[in-house]
Length: 277
Ligand SMILES: NC(=O)c1ccc[n+]([C@@H]2O[C@H](COP(=O)([O-])OP(=O)(O)OC[C@H]3O[C@@H](n4cnc5c(N)ncnc54)[C@H](OP(=O)(O)O)[C@@H]3O)[C@@H](O)[C@H]2O)c1
Image 1 (spheres, protein in one colour):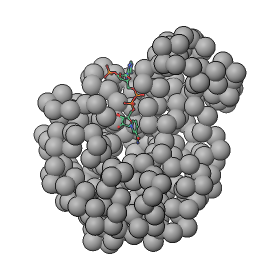
Image 2 (cartoon, protein in one colour):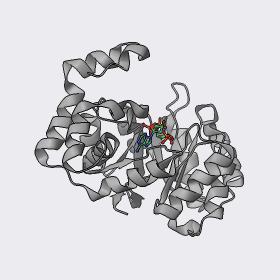
Image 3 (cartoon, rainbow, N blue to C red):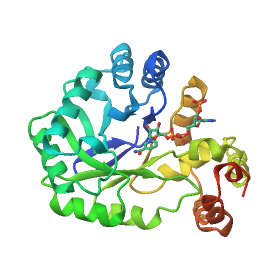
Image 4 (cartoon, protein in one colour):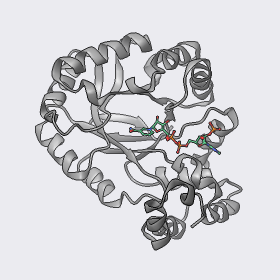
């Protein structure tokens, strides 16, 4: 599996998203994904599925050490001692001794980021966390985090798909040795009906979902974490690495996010957003 190397971390470019996947289905999905070749799993204390994720890892034939495991501390637990408690709870539920990456799930307007990051850096020094990072941080929030952190911020996990322009943030991340992890990379399923992605996919005998994922991971410094509960989709998403888009195709998809249609679409209520633009 290709990796993004940032801030001393080596992050597999494709990860398994697990939001809204719980219980036995989640355990089975994680186990299947690892058997298929995934080596990166994304969870969070807020997803209420860490025990199921841990069981999936344990049930697979893949060693814990070969899996890049990310969890996130929820915004109500960002005070120093709360961060440690939250991580202890995550390790217990996951049934592991450490996580590869601990993220601040969302920034908090009233908790100084320095306090949270100090607690996370201490956990890293204690060997309970290999790397630390953030999620849903803007460029200026990321700049502030990097300025106060005692350990490298290796990733910023943000919404990124063909309808969401993140070019400025991505450029900033590349310049500062931070991976940009794309969440909801399939726009929660909206890309499946996209004419442009489907047309490009026909050239490679691939689906619109594969083209969307390929567009993401073909960019420098970008990791994608699609969620799926279906074995076929898990396999299909992994196979996005078998194609390579031309510069012209990459640029056509880049243009989508800045187009008037897509900008309008992002401002409209969700029902209208289903219209193909
Ligand atoms: N940090 C944050 O604040 C944050 C926020 C949101 C999400 N996330 C993370 O990002 C992950 C992914 O985002 P997401 O779950 O919002 O949405 P997503 O990955 O964009 O889309 C998931 C949807 O796409 C479908 N799908 C997946 N692969 C497919 C394929 N090849 N063909 C057709 N359909 C396919 C899935 O259905 P099937 O199950 O039927 O395949 C599911 O309905 C989350 O699970 C979570 O780990 C993080």
